[in-house]
Image (cartoon, rainbow over all chains, first blue to last red):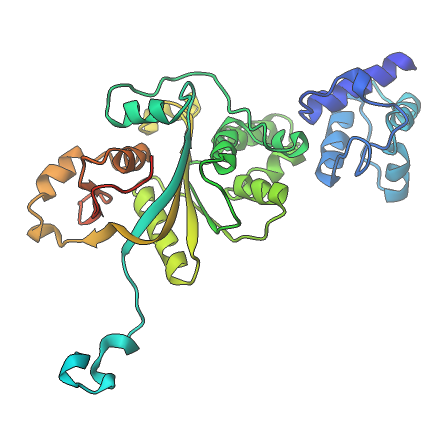
Length: 86
Length: 269
């Protein structure tokens, strides 16, 4: 799982052009949005597209569910591990 | 008029005052390898030229989470807005670019054609006013933005727009021009700029410059000006402002509209 966590951190850094942020800078349990990394709603959309391309995840129709798995890198890794198609 | 005792209603005071005279108070500019005012001064006097170079403006003054959204052209524009020399204080911004960050639009179109899915981040930044808007978000300012684009005569359009904002009550307006070489796909169609650049001029009320109209037939300088005019490039404006030996800059293809220098010493270089 730690490999997947690092993979997702790298995906976030590359997809969102997070200059000066390294894999080690991202706390896997810190919030991704608003607090913590400070990402915004456009970043959420961007990540959704990237997750679809990389892992074949369908964008969630359920906003509450999306909130849950976008809460932190660890939650996102759990979700990817359970739902990935490739 | 008052000295001859004419009634006050005969004076011109009832007419709305609108002058086409103005000043440029402050300026800033960015291009690769142009480190300081001295470098721009040498360029303005045609002792050096702008080099095509990969350097990208660092925009260190902007929070990284906002800065990451800008491409090289946007970063050049942001760098001149943040420049201490410009001393930005919530003035209206007139943002002028011939094409904006066109590499972004092109990438979106490629993605749409090839994958059918575009990047929301790129799409959200692909409108022409996105770059000055990013700056105002960072500054937490609600200053008005106008974003202009045209292939030719953009300098004329930008000056006209800034003048209307002065006439509308703004005490100063930031007039920003930026451009970059186009993606190679467009090479057959267009006169390209030498490199990525941006410059900003703070326009205020004053009597250092005049936007002047002369009917083409009456203009003795018409033929000469027309032949010397690169209609599309934005850089001649900055060169004109920095080179105080020049008295007029043609702004339109027929040179009927000119920017004229009124005072010998103008922009504080």
